[in-house]
Image (cartoon, rainbow, N blue to C red; front, side, top):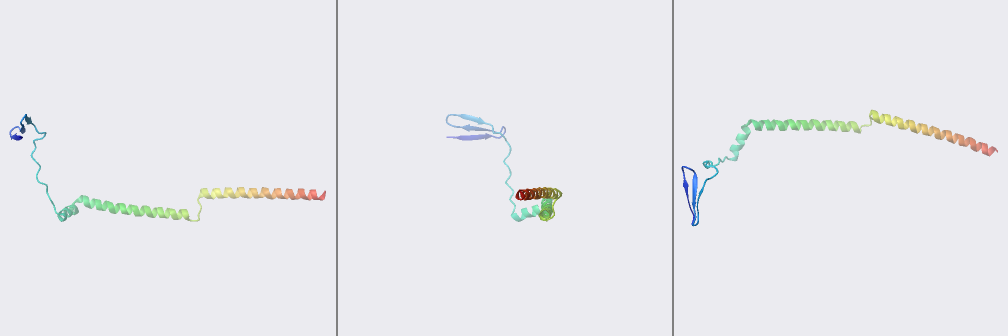
Length: 126
């Protein structure tokens, strides 16, 4: 058998049970919150559309979209430049160096073949 009574002046609650009598003090003695406000979806959309933050957010999204388009165009231009037949300066230097080394190696090979031919002619004459 439980019974409880509330002392309005002190905000304490007295709880009576068959074996105990307890006096409890609630943590906060604030009044209960008011009933929640319910808006229709149209009214909420009207409030959002009239707010300045919605306009700023919309403008920010437009700005970000423009920045994305510019970045994409820049990257596409860089890709086209990279894929073109024009070589960069470092690539041109490497190619010239490789061509020089290949020409030098070919010259040495030709000289060795000439010397081998001369030695073969000398051997055949003997």
